[in-house]
Length: 226
Image 1 (cartoon, rainbow, N blue to C red):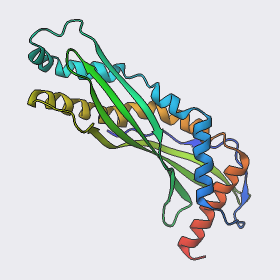
Image 2 (image 1 turned 45 degrees about the horizontal axis):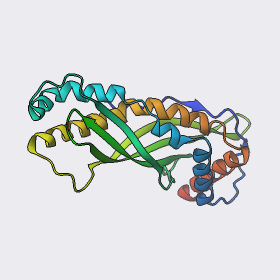
Image 3 (image 1 turned 45 degrees about the vertical axis):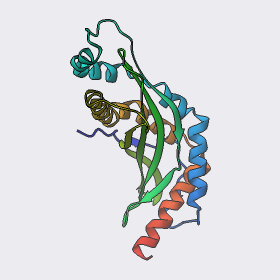
Image 4 (image 1 turned 180 degrees about the vertical axis):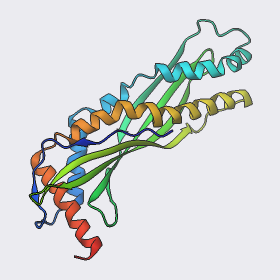
């Protein structure tokens, strides 16, 4: 089951009258948000994610195959798994027609290094897309505030690095790693990254919050033709 975060109200926002919209450049906002993620060490957090649970799940399912390949019991042979070279790709904003909300897409890429028993190391190229919902809520005074809504992670690409030679048995192990990694991204990694993103987006610079509010209003006005 896909897990998403709950609703978090943006506590430090700049309120904007509902009748006031100021033209805003979306690229300037995504550039500013990218810099926020870099400044707050988001990539360091991604690279330091604990993968012990994922490794234990993989080992519990492939131990028999590993024993078959190595010709002996797995025993205490070294097993290592880690994310390396995390990178932040181009952020983008996606608007929902007819509503005052936007979804922030935060694509990231990384390599997953896996060393199991006596096998040669495997490296998988991984790309995920983090999607965070931003909404406007209107108060009784007719002013808007920005709210952070659901947060979810989608595995876009999980692919073994090209040039790796596989036997049929090793291919089964790689398939197991890919399947478990996809489940980990959807159900577990979300619990590591979304609270961080909720906190970051709830403490943005007031001018950036104001720009986001105006951009959402601007696009909502264009969509309904007012």
